[in-house]
Length: 156
Image (cartoon, rainbow, N blue to C red; front, top):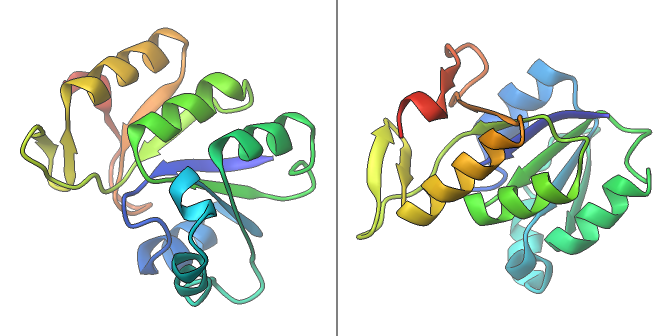
């Protein structure tokens, strides 16, 4: 069962490893990202942030969609992390089980505007958010579990 799907450019770090995992009761973390799935050094570094007793899987977005849709992840309380809106969009549209996306950190860049303390979006991100919203997917910003949910659509 998917307990949380999160966009966070940092992928796996302290807030996710400790606060979010504990809050949602996750026993497995799936990081869905194409470039990460090809980078053994980066995967090794992320394994160091894995909380004790929690399984960590890193796959391409396409392989993640396949695993989720084929039921391979059903036995877990699954926390999914993607690096960006493009990956979230592909994953959400490919997996009907994803009903909500938590937006954590999205880094600043020249083509981005700030919509909350740690969320910077491009025009492409806005279009992808709108498409996911039209499909009925909840899009909420919260850095940590105790923060109040903020609807992304009210900020873009």
